[in-house]
Figure (cartoon, helix red, strand yellow):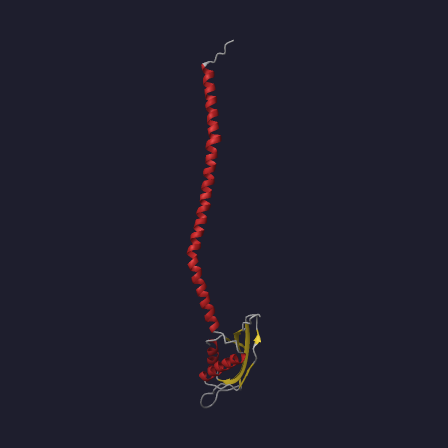
Length: 199
């Protein structure tokens, strides 16, 4: 028996073989290459992002140095505004001198003053306080408080009690009445804790 292949069967077999070859090329050649290209493109995006991070780090390297220098300068400026803390007695004298000069600037005398010993405020700072009693006009009290606020050192008013020395029920018949206040203030100044070396 002789096997006879017709033209139609030949074309069908040819198409079947061609389809199998195309399927093999797509499955084993094009799809893995496409997957490799996708992985390469995502890897390239990762590399690009990493490169941009390195570039930002290089740009910021000098920027961080400048920021550190600014922070150091700010810390030094802030420390210069503290009352010296290495000697509490000198710190108390410095505070008292400043307060007395502020009172003289606005034109009154302190009738009482009391400076306390330095007390620990927290791990970094100690604090000294000064209690004042004086009589002054409202303008003098306001001027004195402005002097304290604009001090070259960190000085704050912890408490203030201000009351008139006399109560007026009617205006004076001649001249102006000069109002006087009695002020009782507690002023505080921060000073750094001395650095203690272990050993």
